[in-house]
Image 1 (cartoon, one colour):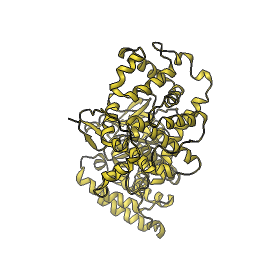
Image 2 (cartoon, helix red, strand yellow; image 1 turned 120 degrees about the horizontal axis):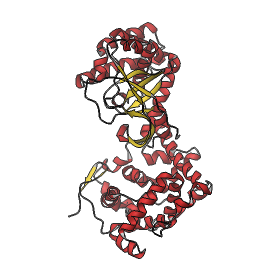
Image 3 (cartoon, one colour; image 1 turned 90 degrees about the vertical axis):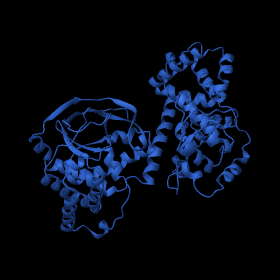
Image 4 (spheres, one colour; image 1 turned 90 degrees about the horizontal axis):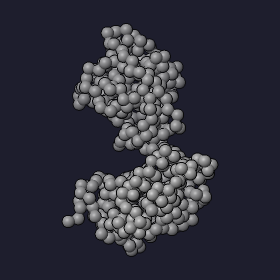
Length: 509
């Protein structure tokens, strides 16, 4: 999973303005390493389709994801390696049609099959080798919703990779090959027709997109594909196969399960690791504060909030400058040592306090001893679903203290989202992590129900939208559900212009 690859990239000089910060990733690296479930699922499904099309075409080529928002996909060569690059803009446009995606991938493989790349290089376009660019960027902003991914980054190509300009006959030939391969691989060839129809609609809106300068008009391609489908006479049941999205609920569940399982596996590995994996140097005190004390102190600081920080620091005989130095030092050590980072989560949970302190201890025991959770849920699954949908992405323990933005989100959440449920953001972090562990353990027994509910997968609406829909009595329902919870945090301040979900929270006057 930590193995990164690099290739030499070949590009043609671009005449159009370059997109800033365009990156190139091996799709299989995104599928294996992304921490964004939607992005990981999309990469998995893209891999499946590409593997099918590779098999029937007899072409072996590297599949690469580009963060370029332009609507395009293209084929190129890197030394002796064949490469197919699919750009994020095209995936966005075709995301709802799995067969159309197969048509795109088959078309680019067709250019390789017919040796159009080398023929194109013999024309006036001048190819330039950009050199071997490698590295691993963890947390690079890519994919739908700006999801995070750690992958094999192929480079920031400056002017960007652009496609060789093939002639009309070559483009038509690539389409014909793709249609035949789609049928052979079990994809509805009508996906090629839908692709051309959609490209035709997009052409009127995005005339500057690269795909329209390097490909014939969609009307001509549509008619040619239609004739090819009629000629090949695919089975009726294949033509009747309904349109399906690139990523369905099953794929999302599987991707989420992979991510959560990797987190649990990391914790188990850290807890069962040899003593040498966490060195004495990593655990060494900073300003007389040891690692376990530090984790507990972070818990206490987050429980106390900004208003209680000064009192807590005085109690521990620490200055703000010392706290900053301690935070920076331990954060750096944890970044360098994943095992230390995982141990932090256990120690932090062990120090839990407040109304869900018992659930924090239960969670720490479950991780540390690899055992089931023993307590009843902190609140109902329906509540967990709603709150996780709104705030869950901020709640995963990551071994670092809350930064200024995170604290602002926490303060805003306490007032706008959590108050009706009688919980603080601190309480929510413990409860949400408890529910995520509950879902992960259920998955081990083959039950994905909790995960589906918690992530809002396969429901009529997402958890984040749950309390925004329905009748006018939502507030009454929320208050009734929260009635069993008596304690509500007080003196909570909301920062200016804080965005929580799709709402901008205004500070109390």
